[in-house]
Image (cartoon, rainbow, N blue to C red):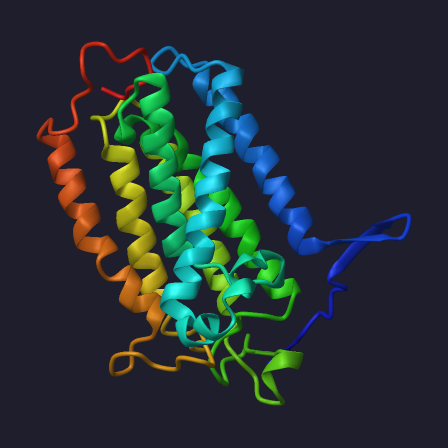
Length: 271
């Protein structure tokens, strides 16, 4: 087994204010993602201005936070929050769902698209390649925070997490960092280097995230308040399963021309 590195969750202090690694990595991922989208927007097939990218980030951030929180409340701990409704607003205490956040981001893409006369799938295609940056660094932050660790294992690289008791466990956060972060980033970055049918890049993200998350959940400790939901499947897997056929169907529809952009849409499609 490997020893847990015991990284201080506080990266540094600004005067009396502690700056935690979790928040710091989220900020870093936001900055890197934004800079990449600004550069991506300069490409001939996109032609997005810096101001448009920053405006889009505002919509996406609101959607991700609202959707992520509501998804967690509905899918992971509804009985508790029904008894403590005020705590639904206390997002600083943790409790976010990726799947809810994804729905929120799609709603944000739709809202921004209506404002700028762009189709939802065009906006999703534009932003999708940057998403694994935040996903990957977020999983590193989970590892540093000693949370969301894996199931008991005796593999040579198993880790004894302080919050997980004396038994060695799968470092599932690192698996997710590699698959949902590094590998997914490479897939989308390489695939999106050439013009693709409208909706293809966003569909590929949905498909591969669903596959990677479903597989990694076999190594992750189920949420203590839920346990296994259906047989040996946990909630993360239940929510990821629909993403796979949906991603395949959207990708097929994309290559059939089902998401062709309307004639009035400004530059920024991938077709």
